[in-house]
Each structure stands twice: as structure tokens, then as C-alpha cells.
Image 1: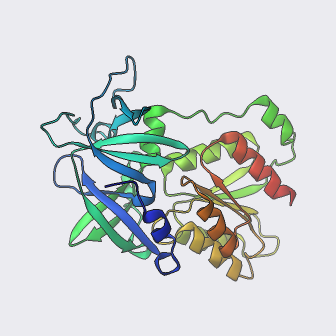
Image 2 (image 1 turned 45 degrees about the vertical axis):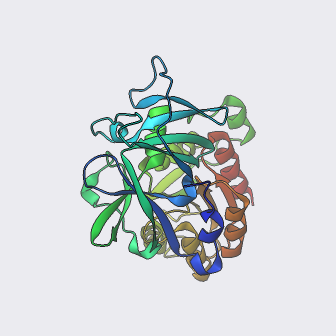
Length: 307
């Protein structure tokens, strides 16, 4: 698979509600998927240089066109038996770009790209808990495909500093300025929800959580039932890629609702690119921000409450 050209196709008017998934496996028969928009290319497993004292799931560093690339054993990352990387075992590396970084995921085999409707992607079972590495499930040709929470994998393996600097806290005027304000955080990634809430907690902002747009819309209608409803949400921070109802559709539905239309909506996405901002504006979002820089999120929240 060469450099992905599906970024434009994915956001074409006729494909706005469709999701392209790259299917692969990490050993065994269970198929997994990742959004093609996060994929740069797929290559055979290259020579890797071991990194001393790195996370156990870091297989090593490859040199791709002169640039270093961290390669993560995806099977080991999600609690399965680690994979071998060599010329004779057919393993592949999926090179991805999201959350402002590029990394490779070692997989057993890559299958193909399939297209489905976001409405055909469902949240993982409630019983899967916070330990689950699945953000959604869908059925392809009679088989259940699990969409992996690669944001969670990356966060656990590489780590992410979510603390705010004293300068940022001073700049956004946290001395009671935002205390008690209420924000709904909508994201299918458990790690992304945790990161966002940590930043909001530092600002003194209360959080309400939802795992996808459908759940968020139902909660918003309940919490904002009256003009001065107790527990009313004042701002929505939403991911874009989510099962059942994505962030674009959620924003559009909020703008259609007389009860919710005035809410400030910040789309917080792992995907890079101006095309996200263009479509976010079309559906009525107030702002769009690429994950995950705590200082930028804090300033965006303060700006939203200052409008």
C-alpha cells in the first residue's frame, strides 16, 4: 500500500458518512481494523535497531527514508503474544500518523481495505471495561471486526504528559474563572477521555462523559432540558471519529436543536489536516483542535468560555 490517497476520498461529499478500514490481524483469526485516514503506508517489517530500556512493546527503531520510526508490537501492546519480525515470517508494519506523531505498528498480516457506514459501527460491549483496546465493532462479510484504540496503545507505550505548566494556568486565569463550569467530553477512546478530563480538572471545570455522538446527544437533551437546568452542559469537546454517530453529525444535530443550538462545540481530533477544519466549520463547530497538547486544549477551553 503506497502513501494513502484516501484522505480526500473519505471527505468527499458522497463519502462523508463512510469509514474506510484497513483490516489486519495480530495472530489468530480475529480481524482488526484501523481508520485508513491514520495510515500513511504499509511496508514489510524492516531491519530494527533495539532501544535499551524502552517499553517492552517497542520492537525497535527503523530508518524510513532517513527518518527514525518507532515500531510498536501491536499484539504485545494489547496483551497478546508478541510477534517476530524477520524476512521469512511475512510480518508487516503499518505506518500511521495521528496525535501529531508518526509511528509503526507491527502486525502479523495485512488483509485489505473495506468501506462501511459509520452507522454500522457500534460501541464495544459495556462489559469490556476500561481495559478494552476496542473503540468500536462492525461486521464485514459475516465476521466481527474490532476497531483498535490506537490512541490508547500509543499513550500507554510512548506516554503523554498531561500536566499544565504554571504559565498556562496563569494565562487562562484559573483563579476561579472557570470553576464549576460544565463541559461534555465525547470520545470513543478511553485514554483520550482521561487525558481531556485531566486537563479540565486542572482548570476547575466539571466533566460529563460520553463514548459516542449518539450517547452524547441523548445526555445533552436530558441535562439541558430547561433554561436553568441544574447540571446543564455549557460546552462540548468531541472527537470526530466515533461509532454510530461521529463528531460532525453530532455537531450538526446540536445546531438543529432549539435547546442545544447555542452550545460551544470544540472538535478535538487525532487527525491532522485543514480538511477537518473546513468540514467542522460547515457543520457549525466553533473550533477544531488536533490532539493532544494540554496547553492548547486549556487555552481553547478558556477561549470558548470567553466568547
